[in-house]
Image (cartoon, helix red, strand yellow):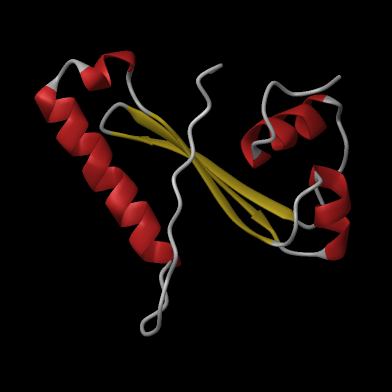
Amino acid sequence: MTGRTDMAFEAHQRIKKEGKCLDGIKSELFCRGGTRISKIRVCSKKGEELIGKPMGNYITITAPESWQADHEAIENTAAILGELLSELLPQRGTVLVVGLGNPAI
């Protein structure tokens, strides 16, 4: 079965549903201010093979449905995104950040 996107979160959920061992993959799912956050860390070659992603950190945020219509929700979602991105940034150096959308989801 193919996921609807190439997101690490969906691949992780599929593997988990299939009952496969999640060696080499660490995950955390939590909510903050109505926003659902998934953190997936692929930390070994075995994890890469399982999830189909290179080693690294993958974060998925799912904002409340009303986030675009509510100014406070927009600010909360932006603040959460900023906090999550800052966790990934090095103390020094240059960083390239790219935001891509998928109009199909």
